[in-house]
Image 1: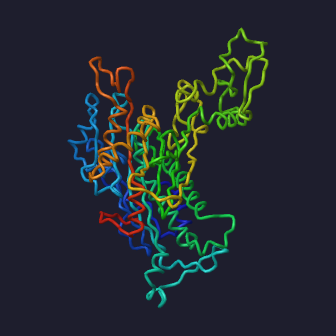
Image 2: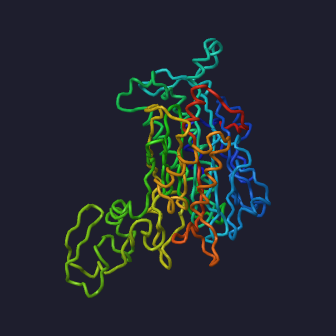
Image 3: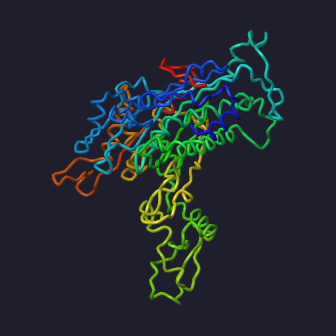
Length: 508
């Protein structure tokens, strides 16, 4: 980890809270050491990060598959078969929080590896023993040793000093698998640290926080997620040299905390709540098309970024030399509407963004506008750096699970664009509802549905070597990843205060 990131974390949590030099990379995952376990806090997580491909042991971030799949080297090899493209599912549903469903399929030849990564984590964080809030309105803290009141604290008081949340993430890599691997192994640990700080300050208690009239607990959780994304992108920048296949990745993260669902999106994956009579989209897809205004504004304010090679304006049609002196409709980053403009020589350049919808491309190079990494991405045969136009800022949406009673069949469906580019919200919802009813008494129904969904997007291999969903529709050639997360089951476990027995790694 870079010294700058290390100093930042130390300033927030204290030098004993996190020692980045003591992080151990075991099987490609970042693990915390015993020294950090004994620093006075109690932050733990059931960590599912990565199973290493032994052929890449020389790198700090070798190719991995999610640990909750429990794949040996032979199974990893089989999962990379791009002629059969098998659906990979967990061997043990009890190793995934709330028995969520998961399935993945490798691409049809776009890259040698499955560049999607996934993580499922149940986390428990506790307030540092020597951190006691004294004046919440001033955000001040006082360090005290253990006293009699602490020793005799009740179970209710202890619960105020502890926070549990369940975390799912999909990281869709491009240009290499490295960034997706780094994000899958580190992002939730950064989030745990930021939530620990809020817990130390006593800012996650509704009673304590009543004095903050303009800031809610939701605002604090959103802020923790946003800050976590910033620091993750900085870590990737600092450590990109440790992985020769860094590239970039999108990030879609879902956090179940108390009675709320938080979904943080930076990219073009998607999360959708599917209920009996309702579909709630929990994420917006960020592409050069959906972020045209932001990108064009940046280009207008910083023309040197384009090096006079691209036009920052959008025109209603392609512009040619014969259009000089003519008036053509255009709009800039500060316009939602269109206005006529007399064409000059400066306008006869390739557009900053070409194409529409999912096919929109930034400077002819990349089709996503948010995510992690891409720190060394340049326009081909030029010195134009694309990173200034790409954002790691997530959009965070919140869903109150108490607004209406959650049923056993209510789920959150998370998927990479390899799935959603071929299956609509409505088609997915109809299929999930049907199969949830048919498999009601089946213990592994969520895994079964996940597998069927990825195969639905993939299609079948045809005699002409094409992947087809049916006679008229091609299937997905991309990596496909799907989580089916039972929201009703989560609320039932929370009400019953049930904590499944799972392996844990302590993170302090």
